[in-house]
Amino acid sequence: MSRLIPLVLLSGVLLPTAPLFGQSKISGLDVGAPTFSIPVLDITGPYQGKRICYVCEFQDDPNVLAFFRDTGEETAEFILQLNELYVQHKDSGFKAVAMIVAGEEATTWLKDLNQSADIEIPLTVFRRGPKDVAARLYELNLEVDNTFLVTINRFVSANVSDIGPDQFDQIAEASAAMLAAANQ
Image (cartoon, rainbow, N blue to C red; front, side):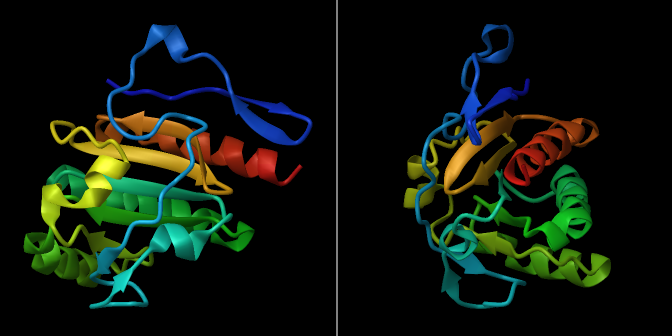
């Protein structure tokens, strides 16, 4: 089940409309919520081996914060799709980061994926795994495989959670809508 919240552009400001078909929150911050600064361990990005807050690094730039419960084939498919989305829109200032909630046990898997697929987005982990404060701050449901927060100006403009790789178009569409509104 996924949750994509439509947005309305009013006087240059993106505002969330009512949830689609009465859908309830599955995982992650609500649309309109501010994003929190969270340190993660950078595995493959420019700060490899160091703690970094990509939310802070991205600041007001349009971006996708992708949270994955653990590693695996579906997570790899999502990361490849997210990287493709980033490459497609990076010239417009778009950013993306993948965060593995399971923690440092995912390090080797992420390095192998990065090396085999030449991924440009940072691949990171929660230092304390599911017990990391980031999981609570971002209200992640640890039973859900994935949570994608599309954000700009440090506010959530769309939340898509618990989907399969064949539904990634929901993230792409939410990102495109955010970028179009930001460029008006």
